[in-house]
Length: 209
Image 1 (tube, rainbow, N blue to C red):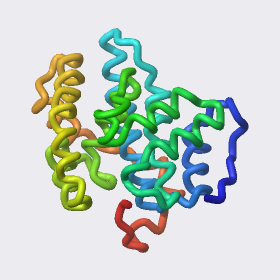
Image 2: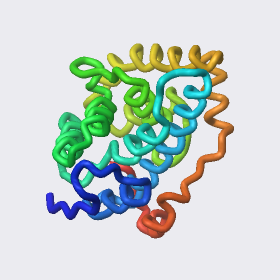
Image 3: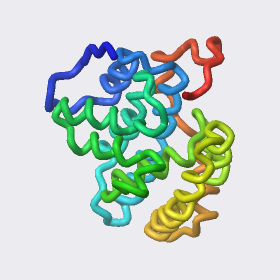
């Protein structure tokens, strides 16, 4: 994979630079929009959780969400997804962002599950956003089953973990899982971060890898 990094090693990227990195790696426009949507949900949840007094960093959470799919252009399959992104971010001197990327796929639950609030939030946000729309956990899992029929057993094995994660986040916000889902479905997504980087999203008619 030809990579042209746009930020110096160990210097924290901002949102704009992170999205430019995704584009420089050849990440498809629809994945840019998905990443922006996941980042918006993750930042919202991290900010809400921080207001309750929990030790969570909304800025790192948003960056981790923006970069969680940066290996989508590498040609690797679902089994290696997340690990490649983590290796890139680790090499750049960002172990916290690397762990977020490595621990966001479904298979992380059987090997290296999310631990920090930032990792848990990005993992959950990615599992309630289908392409660039909030659809809730049920809708997202249905979409994954349709897209990856050969991974139905893995998706089913991860579902109880995801339900418990949803309950943990909802409980921290003094909500039920249904109330949390309703809040996210009603909350307006801000996709401005990706709009100028992926203006051809609808024209290209691409689907998320």
